Image (cartoon, rainbow, N blue to C red; front, top):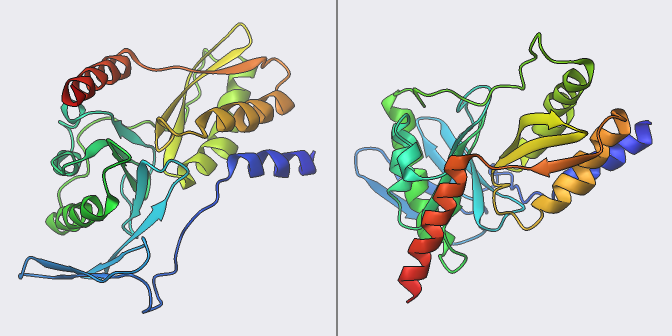
Length: 257
């Protein structure tokens, strides 16, 4: 059983491209308080921002369209919050600022990280990263609340949950969600019906080329191993996500014409 658990977790894990920013040879960004200047030294894709002891680290994700920012301090503290479009960012000044950056398509907050997803693979990360670092630094200096909206908490157990649903939620919260969050995303429980677990993938998981592999070979295999009642796992989207995707596709089509 232990060996199978390790195998399933390996399927969920991604190769991480995290750099120790203590070394001076790494690419660094220094923000000079009061001057409004940010100087970027060429180097690797990992950057270090130092303002009043605020250290922001960037980390690649399995989705080449998404980049994870770690400010070295709590963001939400617990839970996650997804902003699929600018219109959904009314509850967060930071999310609104990030959407002001040209090329940003989606913003996602985690317990201690922020994931930014760009609109197109042809858009370079250099400018987006620089402006995002500035926005994040400015926000944490302001002391404003990260959000006034509800977050996606752990899959809270309900008195109406049967034993199978309780086991699904517990496994998601203790084994699966922490691993997915390490890659800048999250998995939200949406229901269990006729042997099918319905999950919503958010953050860097949205549009990720490897999300299907994660869903089938990682999450589904693990749930089936521990819970015989699970037949398969299905990815679902909220109605607002489907509308946003349609609107964005139409806009992209018009820009190409």
